[in-house]
Image 1 (tube, rainbow, N blue to C red):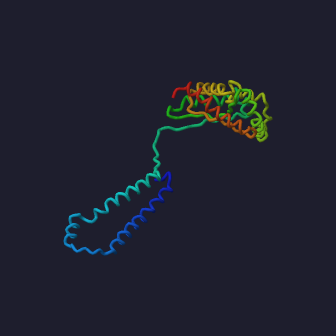
Image 2: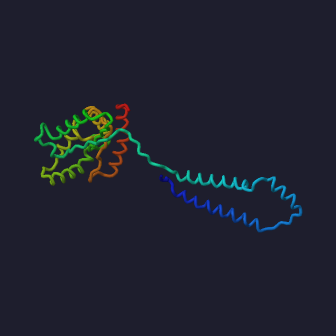
Image 3: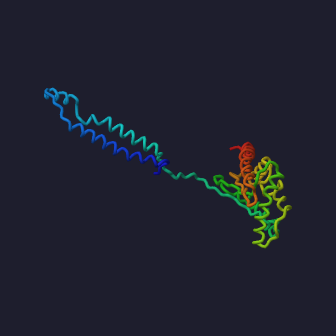
Length: 243
């Protein structure tokens, strides 16, 4: 068991202090002697009042209520593992220049896409499959492509040097951003349309995550893309795909 606000548990330390104060006050009362001539009448009144422990019941109830209130404010919680009978898989495909090689017909990228389709055709229904893609959202498709390209060129240029491939060019990038390309880059309607096409081509996916960061992308452009992803792309996809 854990507590959401454990600082409130310190309040329990005050309860023993409160009990000690009440006991001290009780003992202080007993130190004072009061002259009373009718002792026999006093004994009869004390006997009629019943057992002496009853006078402590209200105090005990108040202390118990304070303890329970303190525990409630500390928000006790317990995590329980519940089997859901489901699993999740995220598919990621390399889109660097090496995927344009024709050692696998027609290209490595096309072969990877076909393999993903066969995989989805065979997996059980309870398996949730998602897709991770390079993507970016802008006010217009041309603006989104221009904003994302400098960082993309630097990133894949570095990868090309490490692997011995030629540097990427704008024509290759534009091909990947095209309607039938692998990149989800464009205005909200364009990106949503590509997501729906991918969903249909692969026979249904449960989620899509976008790799939208790169070293040359302005922070304000990234924030705007995230906002448009939530306010522009997501509603279109949700309306087109029933829950």
